[in-house]
Amino acid sequence: MTSDQILAGAGLIAVLAVGSQLLAARLRLPAIILLLPVGFTAGALTDGVHPDKLLGPAFPPLVSLAVAVILYDAGLELDLRRLTGAARRTVARLIWIGTLVTWPVAALVAAPLLHISAKAAVMLGVILIVSGPTVVGPLLNFVRPGAGLRRILLWEGSLIDAVGGVLGALVFTALESGRRVGPGDAVLHILASAGAGVLGGVLGAAVLWLLLTRLRLGELLGTTTQLALTVGVAAGCDLVRDDAGLISAIIMGVAMATLPGLDPVVRRPFFETLVSLVIGVLFIAISATVTPASLHHVVLPALLLTALLVLAVRPLVAWLSTVGGGLGRGERGFLGWMAPRGIVAASTASTFSASLAEKGIGGAERILPATFVVIVGTVLVYGLSVVPVARRLGVTGATRSRPLLVGGDPWVVDLGRALGRAGLDVLMWAGEPEQRERIVAAGLALAPGELLATATGEGAELEGVTSVLLLTGEDDFNALAATLLRSEGGPEVYRLAEREEGRGVVAPYLRAEVLFAPGLTGAALAGRHRAGAAIGVGPGRSPLGPGQDLLFTVDDAGRLRPTLNGAGSAPPPGAYAITLGPTGPRPA
Image (cartoon, rainbow, N blue to C red; front, side, top):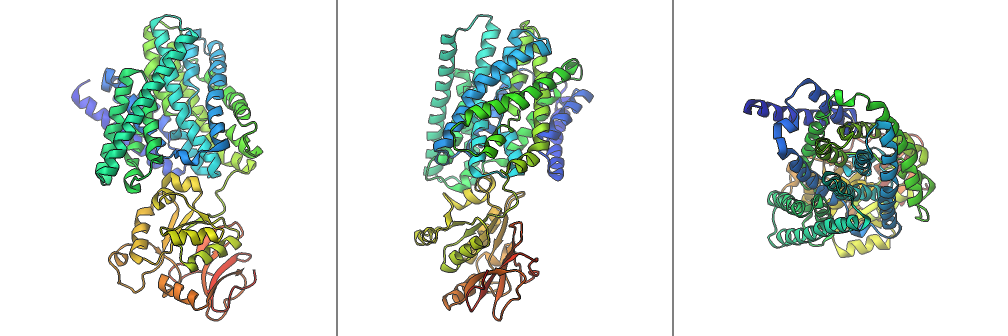
């Protein structure tokens, strides 16, 4: 290809990747549902998006490094301190039982269905054991299950990718060399790859932690440092053992999520924009390599294989893995209905399929199109059914609000109690030890870790936070935090009005949703509370008494509605009203 064609092809891939993600966001669909068919269509209509023609032999190693970056970012959400007890055992079981069941069953069924050799079937089977956070995470965002269930699925999706990558490299090496690999050789290969990945990940994490804590890098340099070390360590590990870089990337990410002393602005969010672009580009590029001719005689058998994986294999794996795990029936059922295939399956199939076909492995050319169909099939099945299935099983947490109250003054703690009496599950965060002790003494849930890590991105999803209420006595802090915490698709963010209009270093110049009627600043609320005013909970139908101000309403579905800028509407019938008044709480 000429340089102009390469330039046009690269530009088209980027445009299609971002365009598909934008459209998916508007349609409220997981982006992968659009990325795969868009890439496939572009590949069928033009030669400009074929990565093997654009990059040649550089494509497979670039894919490996890109996947390492994705897995590092996924590892940033995996705090070891939050995975304990039964949840840790369940994740471990899902990985080893899932591997031991899915791999042989998929291989045994794929060989006769797809009319491929046993060797190609073994390769396809190991490819299909992986899941991945790039598809599991977006689907969970539509459901918002409990924190424990979400952690199990995210941990499984991230770790099984590394396991599948190492096993895939082992099988590929054995098939390419043409020699039989005994159990002892296989174990040694796995241990060597795991050892290289673990050692590289630990060393990389140590260097990265020292750089981020000692040099106090800002957000820009902190992000580029993480990118450089992730790519460098993954590349070094891959040079030692194939796909060991995936293990090192996950270990580095988990270490950054778990180790103390890291500035949350540097650590979270990572380079979310870059990761989103990488995911889109990879899906477009890999799906473009699947031609319409390659799908001939593959679609129907691959759909039958998909049905087996969805309806039989995954439920069996989930049932075996959760015996005695302390999960409820609905949670066990949901685990059995969540195993979409994603970017690691696509990248592994793309990397190994063509090479095995060149070696004369019978049916190896069908590995990539079959994997493509399984990815599309599982994503469509789970993507279209995840919400009704979650509702039927009773694991969705999307309806009832869970506010995060930031602040620990006495009136804020009383507000937390009042919202609890209205039926909400309240989470609180405060920076001062005295305030944190006051929250715990009141029997309210105290958010772990840093504010940014809890209230943004996956942290908010893990804790089920639907809105953040910034209620500290520092106006500038409230304004700055509101600006940092606001994000597309994230929880709603509200702050108190500043003490005096136009007063403050930054508060008058930063926009945010301002709580309560004019004059109800943090200082005014604290003063009235000290003077004897009480925060009460009462039926929404009751009229406000003299001197009472409406702060919030809670409707029958458990949705919290704050009063904003003095324009709060009357509470809907049957709702609770949270008020501040001089005579104590009204009877609920």
